[in-house]
Amino acid sequence: MYKSQRNQSAMKLHRQAGITLVEIGVSLAILAAVVAGSLALYGSTSTSQKVQQLNQDLISMRGGVQQLYVQSSTYTEGTAGDINVMIQDSKRFPTTLTPDGVNGFTHLLNGNLTIEGEDEIFSIAVSGLNDDACILLATQAADWYSVNNDGTKPTAPDDATARAPATRSALCGAGNAANTLYFYSS
Image (cartoon, rainbow, N blue to C red; front, side):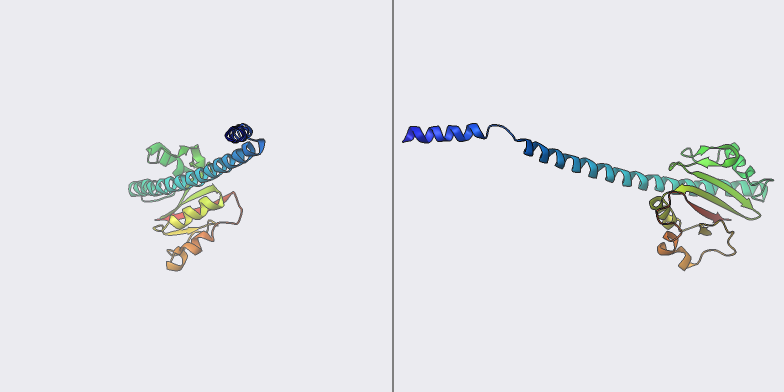
């Protein structure tokens, strides 16, 4: 009886020696899900980091433009593009922005950043923003004179309602990969 039990055990072990095609398929499916999740997480983190950098670039750019104003007492120098050239020539821009001549700069999210001045107020237009980046940037812009999405020069600073995250995030269109935000300062 002992010998037959041993033979049965050996047969069971022999049948379970390999892995089946189904087990390989399930393992590959789990691995694919983990990889896809990791890539999605990396993509959202990367956008968030780029928006934070762009926000810092905007603050730095605002300081550079304000320094130029102290020197010339105006934000207008002939054509609207001249202020972009003045900033580029003065080297008062973050190195994460790529100069693009009269057209301004290219930012980290591969859109354009253009400065326009009028009398004692100037705007920085940031274009080429997808919805997620636009909402993040709009809601982080707490200390600007005004922020809008149509380029209309503000007559007064944004009030608390206009600065609310819900109001600012509404500036970004649903599913639009080409949002533009205008940041105003004096």
